[in-house]
Length: 138
Image 1 (cartoon, rainbow, N blue to C red):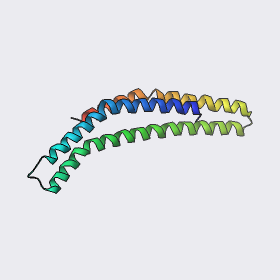
Image 2: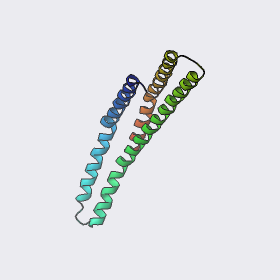
Image 3: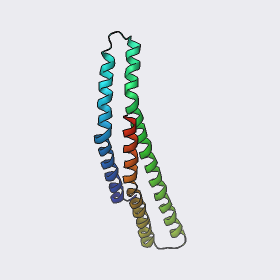
Image 4: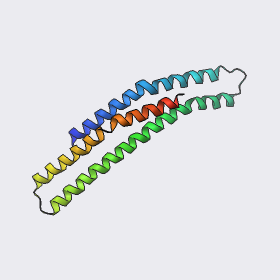
């Protein structure tokens, strides 16, 4: 993928992740630490009970991080498939006798379209992730 297009995607994804971290993940981290501290305040609990309690406190955050990672991997896979399709089309055009400048332009146009299409998916992906993370904190 062209560097400029890659920067566009990275910037948009980075903004999304920072927003999710700031608005949802930090709250979950705060709750996790408070919950863990409460576990340690249980004087009558055994070491195993305290450990189990702390693990339960960590579970929602771990699940949330897994959900975000999985969604980002799906997004990245879809974008990679789209750009591979562009590369295949360019290779086919080159093999059928198209000139290199024309093929490069076709490839760049196709990749730009892939990036544009996928950047347009980020708002709905963000909304879905926020809803999922909010539900996980309840």
